[in-house]
Length: 389
Image 1 (cartoon, rainbow, N blue to C red):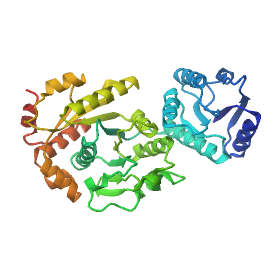
Image 2: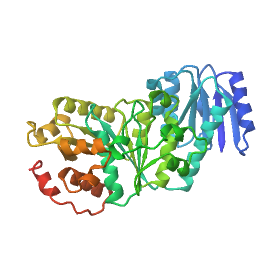
Image 3: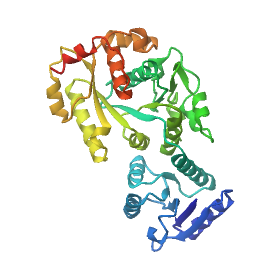
Image 4: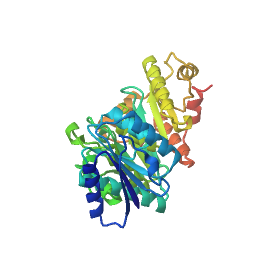
């Protein structure tokens, strides 16, 4: 690879040189200093440079503008940005500008080389393999919408009814509980055990998962918030890159907070499902989420809406709900509190426990449409007609 660096000071440039020249790969290097604090990226051959290292103690709007212009016009280089104490909002700005890796300032040799190796792996995978799987992300418009329950049970239908290999990733860093929805006893390993591995591959991921059924695997969230400290967007990006080589579908259960890790997953997702309930507060929330996704540049076809816990007693019609959110409702799941609660309390997927009830049929129908596999679903069409007359 060809690696360039534009450093803020001679001592920083010296540190970068020392780190890169110790690397055993036969890379080419270009080392430059900023001129009057400006990047002047055009001094580097952007077409042939694969990685560009940039540092700044604080993130400037000028840097963001230059980087954004560069990444929009050129597929190369992948940019590593070193900065001090970047907050979530700043990380999102860097990611929006097209920065691939963010490392700490002052630069350390180990962290810099790890970032370069992640980019090298990604470049190798991109040039050698076509991803096998797709990433499906689920997010609640408002707390308690039921996104975890729907995501987990859809994964079961994809694995059992459609014979797909599925990985469920719980990214609720604050007390994620997806395991309670799918298994009676969770395994001892979590996302933290995967992230801490230096050579992440499909074997490492598999060793940390809990098997739900023959073709369905769960990667649990850290079991306490303190164990999530140190997990960065690039860790999750690397995890997804490896996972989609081995699984047909990677289902990611996301927290409601739109921060750097969530943004990384949303950017990588093939589909984003927004889950809400037939209540005014949820309709307001889903409208805000859709507006945010529009500002972030996500195409409307990338996002779908799921109306959960719908029943005949709801005063607001589907038509009025669609008018309120200014988007069609793509999926409707019936309200079945008794069976859903029993499923969660026992840790048994709903379809395994009650295979022919309307709620289980809704999961089968959705899985069948996603995979384009024909699944016989008794009485599902007649149930749906009640809402879409």
